[in-house]
Structures are given as structure tokens and as C-alpha cells.
Length: 254
Image 1 (cartoon, rainbow, N blue to C red):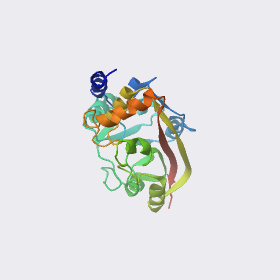
Image 2: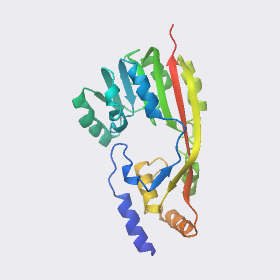
Image 3: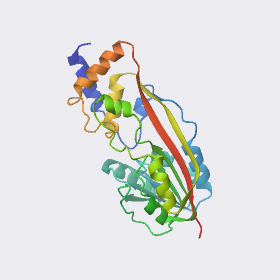
Image 4: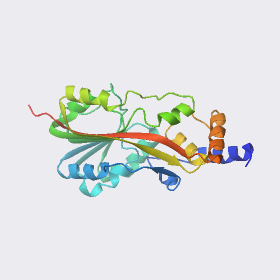
């Protein structure tokens, strides 16, 4: 296949729609080695014992909807990506969920009352430890799964970029959660491989998660894609290093 034909295929992958946090299009095209834990299973257990829940960075509400049968009476979510805010609102508001357009980061405030939630979930979204401690009720739980700031560092480096959030590590967050009055009950780390079947699948992934290679596009990064294509023809797998970590914590009771 010549460069012109490859470019056409990759541009088609780049232009495919992506919404919420739904990677089903990559089923059979992308494989991540299994994590040694189940975020969803533990989140469901914690939900059964709570009365008020905040899901931080809910995306389009996909994961939350999978746990609908154990929702507490009060469910609130945040999201800041405009297409996902719209999607989450359409899906969740008819079910009585409050949807807040709220950006999450290490220093932004959140529009919630002190001690408002007895369970806060966060799957791959930003964390402000002090704000999390403020809005979490005493004896309430904070449960998060995070992408390590150096996850897929080798993929980012291949495109001559640097990881945009290298500080997003347990070494950064855990001491700050302690300072916010949140005690760590469980902590796990994992490192494994994420593998793509072809360059087109990788293109789709990089457009869906734009911070892996900042400013990525097929046109601007074509030389790197062609280099990867040559490596694939030589029999080298499209495999990169993925890293995740899990924190379960509980707010101190004074």
C-alpha cells in the first residue's frame, strides 16, 4: 500500500466520531492487558452503603449507567467537555441526576457544599485534593482510578512530545489527600501493555485522547505514522507501556 492510500485510510480513522467515553469502536483493534482489580466492582460495593454520590468527570455517563441498580437516592456528576456535558445531561437528567459543567484540576474549586457527599468516585479525571476533602462528608469514601502521568510515555516520546501531566502520580496526590484529612485505605499500582492491531486504530485512539500526543493530527504527524508503519511491516508490534493506579480513602472523623 502506497503513502497516498495509507493517508486516505488514516484520515478516515481520524474523522470517525467519538463521544462520551466509549471505545467500543476499538474492540478487537486495541488490547490492554487486564488490570489486577475491578474499579467498577468496588465502586458498586461502596455505592450500596452511601446516600449521596458524586461522580467526577462522568464522560457521557457510560460507566455510571452500568451501575444504575445500586445508585443512592442523591446522584450528582461533573463533566467539562462540551459534547459530553450535553450527552450526560440527555442521559442522566431524566433519571434525576444533577449534571454540573465543572472543570476538574488540582487547583480549581467545585460548586458544592462542605461535607455534601458521602461517596466520591473519580475514574481518570482531575483531582483537587483539598476540595475533595472539603465536600466529602466525615467517614465518607473517596475512590479513584487514575492514568499515571507517565503512562504511554514511550508512545508520546515516539512522536517527539513530552507527557503533558507528568505530575499526575500517586506520589503527588497521596500526601495532598492526607493533608486534606483523607486517610488512604488501599493503594495499588499496575503497569502493562496497550497494543493496537494497526496504525488506523492508533490514529483513532490519539484523536479520542488528545493529551497523549498534544496537537496530534494525521497531517502534522505523518512522518511518525509512516515510520510506525515501516516498523509494523518489519514485524514489530504496536505495543506501548500503560500505567494505572487505584486509591481508596476515607475522610477522618473529628
